[in-house]
Length: 374
Image (cartoon, rainbow, N blue to C red; front, top):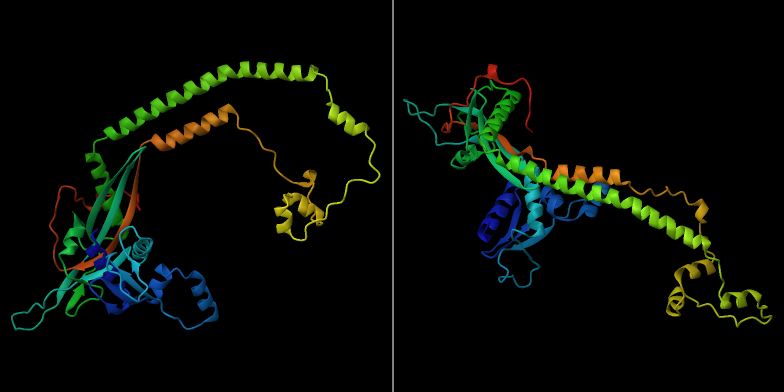
């Protein structure tokens, strides 16, 4: 996405919420954010919680966005917008939040009848869905499907999004247009979309799944060999530790001469000169004292170890560790398929999209009874 495309996208995003553009320049523009946009990209959650609780008047946030790093406006606090900017990611998230599903109507020029008057034009309901089919293992591959399903008659087309871009759409139904009834339910349309997804997966080469299972088998073999070798070494390590324990038990406990002298020496009646405690904690730290000693000297009570309710730490056994590693490898390498809904909408069209593939269109009585893909 080039910088010009970034600006066009941001302008379309702000125009959708009827944002007020204070100043527009070829290199930047200043905008007053509406409430919905401010809550999504304004980064003022505490302000909005305070305004909502106190029922105060909203003070709009004014931002200046630049799209060329070398063309910064003088005297204005601006923010450079590009594809990797944090604010741009917030705009994408807000767009996905508010625009994941839309309802649009096709608008064409007025159609005149034989008497030179406008005549009503029917609009056919279409369900448009953009789906992402992900082939997952230790690698990833995504397949995008742009499906359009006729809700008046059971019919499906592919590449429906490209067809929509060539039309003039409006969020309100135009004059002299009326909508046809929907004879196909949303559940039945989803079942048709599921059939299309299954057909797409049937056309894909399944070699990727076989290769993923082969890599999984190799990793599992390496893991089993490692733990088998570890199990053979454990008896030797246990015998060595037992011998070291016996040798330590047989050794007599000998006190050093310094310790014996300290035990038998008589205490000095005068005692060492008392050291004056520092006044503040910073002075105590500067003199080399420990934090724990300072807390104890100032009456901070410490909890005895017996009163601490701490669960006993338990070391994992080799079998538990092996099973955990197996589960991790299975999650990483096992081939699987995920289907996610990107966005979609309900479109009322007077134009007819081209039918890309007619062999897959099936009557509703042959559809499966269950199976949503979203």
